[in-house]
Length: 276
Length: 230
Image (cartoon, rainbow over all chains, first blue to last red; front, side, top):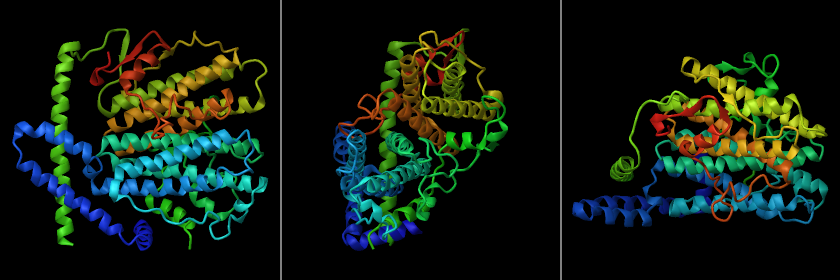
């Protein structure tokens, strides 16, 4: 599986990766044996103390995997904005919004790191030009800004799809699921804003995704939008249902629903931006 | 390999027993609160519509909100406020079409379990006034996002959870866009997102959302005894 390949690659950069996870499991085991020796009357106190200390340690391996996957997407985004989101080529009117996004992504990263504790994977090294495909990104001018916005849009839309695809895998952990949903919608807000900025600069995109339209010609970005042209939801072809007048059109219904993406597809997208 | 598997199983056991313990405590607390505050009943008053129970209740809850949104934008687009820009006209028309699709999907998916068509009351909104229309749109969209986010963990079916996820991010796109029309760069702010700390959206429970939604209904209002909402 490609995700595991990615973790392997990160593991090479961080040889302690495996060691970071296993002590955690010992800790969980210790909690169990400790608990069994404590009188029932003392349990509420013991549990609340342990939970405070060990919020991250109560996460199942599946939840840890999902959160590390999310963390990978947040690493990609936060470092992107930290690197390119405060440059002088950003028009002054656009700066407050870009800064809001930068702060949000760093907060999301921090939130995931806190919850994962020592189970968190390390940050890989990124090459946001994807081996030169997006070389214009490094230009500190309006061409560089347009490229910055295009990639930012792709990363946010990718983030929306990534979180959405993992929601079912978090159903066993309701609090974590709600937190993930509360990140997911913020990524959606960011994506809409970046698309709106681009629309106002003359790019043929809207705040929502029409079919697979991205307004980004470079081929790798097509991966981010593959499948967004789906018109069937819940087994119903939505173009057979009424719109404001006559039936809804394919454009209307593809815009009205964002599609999830698989871990494998998202990982392949992230890998395009890993430093070689 | 064997050792690591044993550890994984041990971890799951610990978590399960913790959850059992935690939910028993929460239930005990809940019983006390319920007994103290109100009598539990299973029917709704004649002037309310029952959303049902389980996933049907959540889908009907979403259907009710989508009915409100679709009706609102239909009224907006039927007679746009004076001097609207072509950009705003196009964006609000798109949003209307998305909300209608959401409404029609829930109606079709719920079939005979669907609540009836609700009668909106938008008398508090001045449809000739740009600020009034966009402020109401912002309130509806922010409420919709918070409502979907808050209901997600209550959904039992993974397919319905994914469907709700497909819709909520589009509601978030609407919310961001309408907010930008009202005030550029206000697509997120600290009233809806915890920007000072986690940058998580502030979700709302059905118990918080239903009373707000009901202020926009004339005739029958919505209730869900299965969720403790009367």
